Image (cartoon, rainbow, N blue to C red):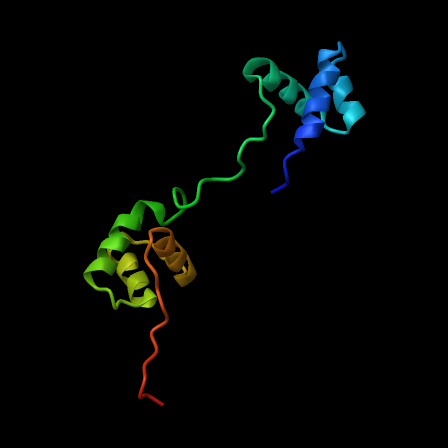
Length: 124
């Protein structure tokens, strides 16, 4: 995902439009698309602000595992020693969702649970 334009560039575009030039002309002068210049000018007129909006989705609220997070947390709290592989199997059996182990790890981390790799000692 690209980075937002700087606040300085946004302000210069809006000042250029406020000085009586068209937004399309501002786009040509400042090297942005006409649509971007129109959007900046419109946003400044209606909201009075030029601060860039947050990009991307909020973490943990979307994705394949979001609807099943309560189920996963419930299983982990009931059986703290469950492995990620076993947890993935339980999710597949009951909910019909197959996921990568790394996705499960991230989802549980976002839920405030930590997983450490279990090492079997005494086996060779």
